[in-house]
Image: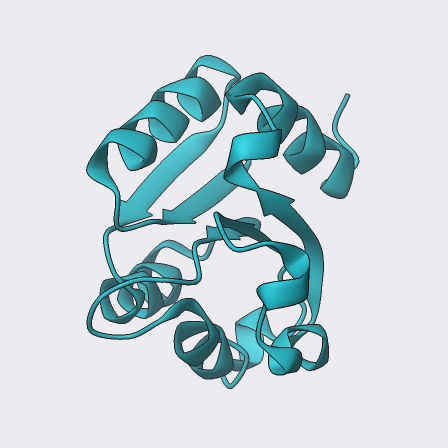
Length: 123
């Protein structure tokens, strides 16, 4: 089963995406801040990470920087899922190997699932 980690501090959004991905046949683990997200990635070993940028304790860029130091996750696809427009995104994101960037308000949950399937070459 394909594994997805959702690192998102808004619990409503977090649970909505968990349900949507589980319904689509994915194994899902969630975290509500960057620090917990890094721990989830270490333990769960997801095939793809959905990552919010603005979170308490540790933001998404800091979390992704740590995730990229893990040998098993240097190449794990990461899709940023945020309310920040791409022009407002931190400069370092591309260097950290972000696969794609999704502004939450511009995509339905179904479209996000389709984007993830595309990134993982799943039909």
